[in-house]
Length: 367
Image (cartoon, rainbow, N blue to C red; front, top):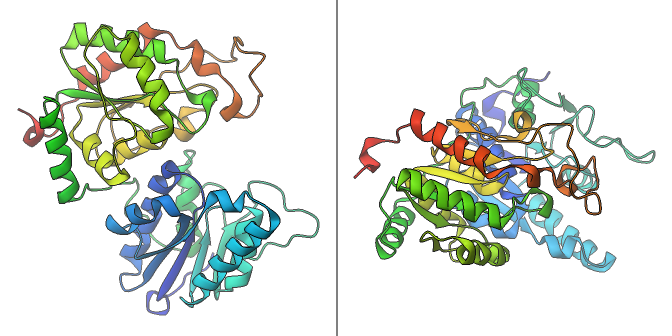
């Protein structure tokens, strides 16, 4: 363990090259670092589409962005993107780097940036190749503070640095302008604040996506039982699933999939009575906004990847999974295992009813 005096840390780099859910969880790390080093500049290396969200919400002081498509392109494209990243990063003259990405590429970047204090994991998530060396000089446990959830992987560098854990869960406050946009959207679609369920039927991987037809059946049953409204949210690549839900549902469903920025989505989720959706980034966003969650899980263990900081239920089929998609499943990779398809509509409806019965959102959001 190494304790770095706050006065000596003026600039911190956090390498988090994964998805929006990972960045939401990593925001708790950034908040604790800001509390410990209030004068330090906190910079994230992340995918370009997330940059404005991080800076606008105060998670990062600055962002150095990369484009995932180029990093997956030709060797020349990857080389150019890597060169541009490192060149931009070295301008900050970092005192401290924290490698949450824990990948071969991120270790190359850490070595080239060459901060005085470099935090990495011991052991790394994937074994180092025989020619590869760990550039970190401060080693963090795979999971810190005795935790099992993946959040504690992202908090573990604090423990390695001797930094007190003062903000244990992600909390992201929607911006006032985005809240105004969210309220205008609700008014436009005749949705009542705190009286609608935000539904997200997408996910980064197909293996994590519950069937749209079952979402439609669950919406119809919940509409009949609760009288709540329903709003479909998601990214541009998730329109097909949303359209199938609208076509199959007998109840009215408002569909804004592909029409919201991340900042507006956060504000909309903050106005919802409940979030219902697959294991995904929006699930973690809803939790960070303080909204109760029903998150649908398959092979992934919700004890490791479930929502944190709010009341939640995470329905999951019994394990070991009785495979119903043997032609598609590629276990043990949770992203390529279709266990979530075995979730029955009744189990999801019961989970929603359970959360509704035991939670009440902030009265200022109520009608």
